[in-house]
Image 1 (spheres, rainbow, N blue to C red):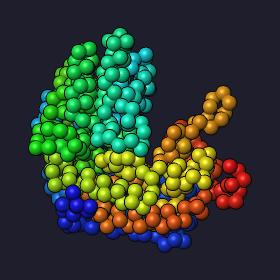
Image 2 (image 1 turned 30 degrees about the vertical axis):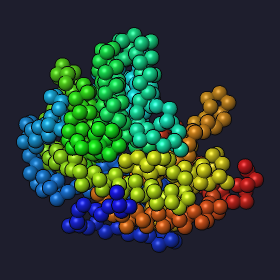
Image 3 (image 1 turned 180 degrees about the vertical axis):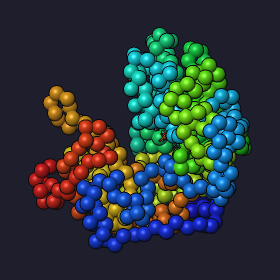
Image 4 (image 1 turned 120 degrees about the vertical axis):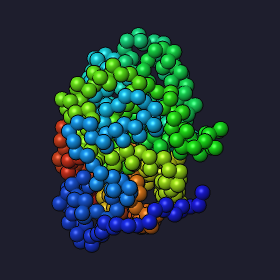
Length: 467
Ligand SMILES: *Cc1c(COP(=O)(O)O)cnc(C)c1O
């Protein structure tokens, strides 16, 4: 694989982006209380906040928008969408939704009751929240290797089948309404799951009579990793591998904001017609009639076309190699990252990179601030700001194990040159890292504080005293 595989598209429409001058960046940081969620996107040059809903659509998708049929019921775009999902995933029944979490909400509010358990490799935050809000417990059973950032493993998203068997044997069948598997494992760093592991999990589910659902957000990226890394899969096409994956499942939830290559959309699909019929009643209450599910006809068309495009081997080779090369370059600068690089993002280990900033002063947030200050680049903190808590009894801080900065790569949006610019800025930050300042949180909301928190910087001298 060449270091930089060339972009398999050419530019037809451009969206200008602007790099604010250093003075403006400084002002923006202060105005936002050093929280990058509060910086307007217009003032960001390279935005690596998320790969969700940020994809660039193709000329065919944009053309598809003009073919939008905005009839309330039975729009032609729905039938194309339905046919596409059936062909690619093989599930006979489905409902469209406006984004992935609604599919989760519909599925779990129908199946999960208080005291029930849903296992997964790692639950994504909205998945966990939708299980918990129905009184269920979201259990993460990823393999041991998946918990250690420095351990190399080709399929770090695999689930621990021994633990699954143990859970199934020890728990009454009616307490496990369904089992989930996330492809790729987003909360574990975008790590893929092997076909063998999916098969093993599926067989266990069948043995114990438990429905098996896949969180399919990055199904095509996962299929590409299987093709590249799994023995015996190298000669099979991506659509064939995708078929083999979903044949093993009873249904899936999907956010088309990821591998749907669209800016909005999703679906819930299943082999269980009764379940889908029940869910349609709830869908009508919260999303809309079952042939549009919260989406315009034109959006359904864009998603249908995106789902076919994402299977293109040239696209996938570029997509995955771009993220891999980005990670290799950052690691090559001597900056510690989570290994191996997953499909959609590179995670920098800020605790290791900035050892002079204690966890109480948010080292990963300090690096997020430095990236904006240095190059108007936006990444996201995945550490104590996002996951830190106070002990309810003692009031002491409880810190997560890792302090990470996630640099997510939007699909088909940035060229290799853009990402090289990010690496150049990181190199400059590396050379002055000893001067980076920790932060103190001056405002925090009671829930999901990372979206709205405010900070102030701690002067370097005081920082040493405070340690
Ligand atoms: C994004 C995501 C979801 C939720 O999808 P939304 O479209 O953001 O609601 C669920 N699971 C995983 C793994 C995701 O990455």
